[in-house]
Image (cartoon, each protein chain N blue to C red):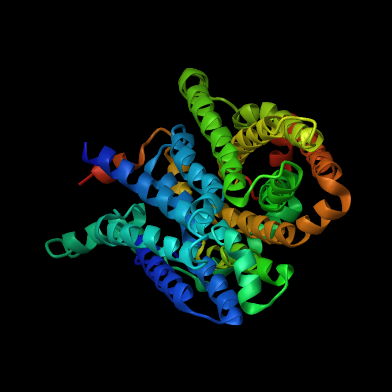
Length: 88
Length: 380
């Protein structure tokens, strides 16, 4: 029961997290005209705020992702992750 | 980094999300354009672990057969996020253009509390590592699996940075998956330019009403998620229990979706004119968004099966290519649509996606042979 709760919890957390980050990319679009007037810059310069955000989104994964972890799962095809943890 | 047992998955999540919220707050109060651009980059930068480690955490929790269920909610998050952004902002921006930036803070801060207090650690190696530390108080000889092998920094670096590129270059299936998902994602981002031109220009809708059109992306995504979950529950998972389906069988839903994706784009391209009611191109968008959701799902489950050792790095490389291309689309799409018009502009993109149809069929038929030739892949 606790495992199911944990799964639900993690799924909502990671999904909401991802949602917020990606929502943050386009949420700025309606502000474009206001920013163009405020800082007197052209549209393509304002568009940079979206483009550079999307680029920024990808730098950290390149550095933080690394080697094997699904190997365990593959080797134990029939075995659920929590079976591994139940051995105490 | 998230693969190192001593650290686990949570600290990178929590730390980067704290920084994400802090940068969002600074962004909302600062009044200097170059600073805004730099802070936007940092905001994206600190938000990014959600995508890379999110997939890894989900794979920690689900068996191979059930993993697609886990991915549904996660892909929905990253697919619906950009679609809801303009809508959330369009009504707030009329009073103050900084409101959208505060909205990011408003959404982020409560989640930050939840993540800091409640997010469970999922990395198996970390959990075993901590358990070994506890047990060592009574049995000094206990070692966790992570402690028996030594981490070689050079190997980690090569695995993370060089291998994905090498795999993508040497294995056409992975190269295709990267290019095609980048194209689909780029088209999705080009809608942020296409919609104002289509619905604002051709159909004369005001900005607030126009941002409601983005909901069609979510409608498509929701329909596809329901259909896809039903496919998993009633067709795919029973098959898994009866026999071992081949890896390419996971691409079956995508085989239908690639056709629909192109059809939806053509529908949007050719129906976007004043003589046709606005709902017709919008239905095209629904078809496009639903089918591209299924395509992303298929790619996310297909890739790790052939390269379990490099999966996190492959996701990262895939994300990297996808985002660079999406950023490019953001910059050039507007000029393409203004010069060619919506009809021809989207037709160009739809024409490119036709190539994706042949690619998907090719991989479905010959993927097993390609994998047999690749020295990185894991055989069945």
